[in-house]
Amino acid sequence: MSQQSPKIGFIGLGRMGLGMASNLQRKGFPLTVYDINKDAVGALVKLGAQPAASVAEASRGCDIVITMLPNSAIVSEVVGGADGVLANTAGGALVMDMSTVEPEVTDRLAAEAKQQGKSFVDAPVGRLASHADRGESLFMVGGAEADFQRVLPMLQAMGSTIHHCGEAGAGTRTKLVNNYLAVVSCQLNAEALTLSQRFGLSLEKTLEVLYGTTATNGQLKIAWPDKVLKGDISPGFTIDLAHKDLTLIVSAANTAKSPMPIGAAAKEAFSTARARGFGGNDFSAMVDVLCDLSHTEKPRLKQ
Image (cartoon, rainbow, N blue to C red; front, side, top):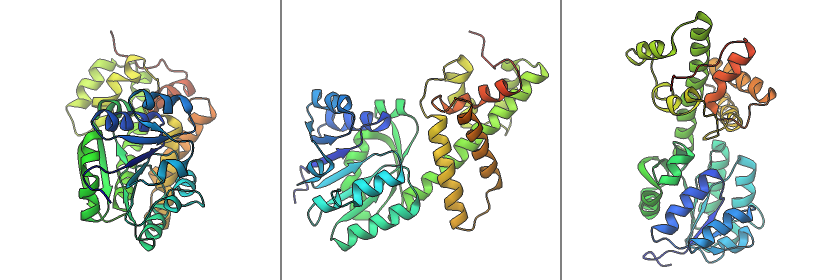
């Protein structure tokens, strides 16, 4: 199998996958691509990628197949199904799943790949879709050292920060820990700023104080001023996806017998937001949800 010019399949051209695959194609990694969204496939074809009509076609003959998919059930079917990636790749092939899924799914697929003489790497993605578009994603990678080195050039083409977290499964578990703090911080920020609004405080002065103490966090200081606090609730990472991740996280914590009372409460807060029709908004819009519930003016920075 050629190590100099691997044949690469890319399956899953959603909001994150499209940017990631585009960077690979632009930076000299010719791809065969598949997605149920034909417009997304067309966008990659315009960049020079080869289209595939199915998962099987996108996988067949490939040295490396990359998947970036919405949930555990789809990853299980696309990678491990009867007509999936493992069934249509030869011995020595490597599968790199970049989705956020249940750790048990990653473990099972890694074991199946090993039984077939293939390699498996989990490399879930940090940061936002805008970072993926710019090739500035962060990757948390699980896999053997040799497999990590094999995919490293592709990760470098798609991102700016790469962490090898351990053996297969370590990337997925690190992603859940990371997203737990990111999503729960979002909920805490929403509650805090709603309270500030109810108190009638200046948003600018409140943020100035918070930014100078240990109360601050990346969501509040970096993400929110460019999103909800300027009135932009277009999705970078949706409330629906945040709820999905919290559901995965709480379930994985239960399996590991690790208590997560704050996570469980935050999950129900995101459930409330979804029930009220906010699911497609950016997850920073959780503050708007709470303001809506309490009939409070939404916090917005002065332009």
